[in-house]
Length: 347
Image (cartoon, rainbow, N blue to C red):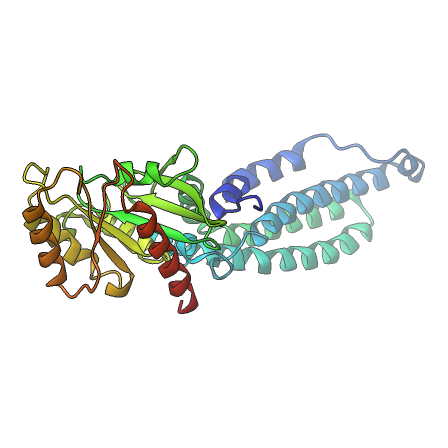
């Protein structure tokens, strides 16, 4: 299989400087001693001074255009997988894309300015004239940079979130495992993962998600356990936590919703069904796989009650498994992969 690729890994290389940091470096370049090529020395002191101002301005141009150029080459959200684009949109709105667009425009302006002032400084007849034009160039170049980086801090917030986000490859099947605490989500993820699941922060929540990877019939898939996200009623969540729901919603991923039907379950069946109903508001019922877990310890009447309650919501199929004993697990995963492919055809 090809090496996994995801924006959250690439984002570790992303960087947007602040205007103040570039201004400080530019002014340092301007005031520090500047050497000129030895070939200039025979042209006299006045020419040497003029060339010093030219070299200072050239270095400042390279500093500003180089840094803005790196910002201009950052990927815009319309080139990103939906999951990561949604993280940016929900965190900073249009500020990230706007910063990139301003950087693209500003590099062109800086280049035009530099070509103009390079000619003017070279044509200066005295060092005082060269100094005046050099200061003018630096002032204008810094003004352009300041406008370009007006929203740098907001854009950097988005990059920080990307760096901390789980590494999800949207070119491969993705399965979300949901359900209230203690229903067996982490057990299921570990059973269907061929390697130790990764634990990553998730945007807009203090919780961490568990990301497993597996292969079935040569098909590589990803399975995500979302503690603290799809495990309680939505009306108990604050506005920021609801953004985490919106990010998950952007994934073309079916949701396996686990239910513990046993009498000693951590939450009553009614409470679990209430959360399932909430999940039905963010995912088409066709792409939710209601799954009764712990068939190895549940009584027949408990299984029957849970199944009938779920079917009353409009589900045609209810899966019954034991994640702990791996009973019925692989049929469930095959169905989820099938739905994942189907979802991507229509999104």
